[in-house]
Image 1 (tube, one colour):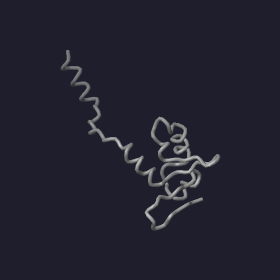
Image 2 (cartoon, helix red, strand yellow):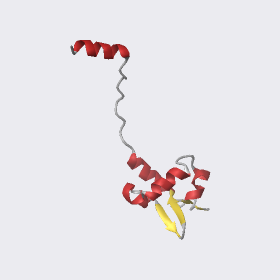
Image 3 (cartoon, one colour):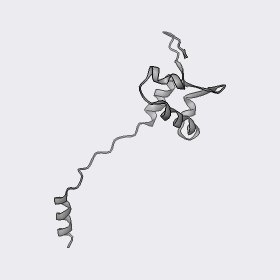
Length: 92
């Protein structure tokens, strides 16, 4: 089920089970995990319970996802056998 206010600037409310019809990510099991831990991860700002169904606010979801973004740390080169051998010789 999709309650969408086209062109009004309002958000779209999507049933959790219908989310994959609109977006490839995240999958339903990941969404259920987020719902289970909603009070700890802030996902309670994205979802509403309507009876036994869970409705997701599409705009709030993507705003929440952007807030979860963490900066990438620069990747360091993995040590090779040669570099480890040099380190062990130099530490003697």
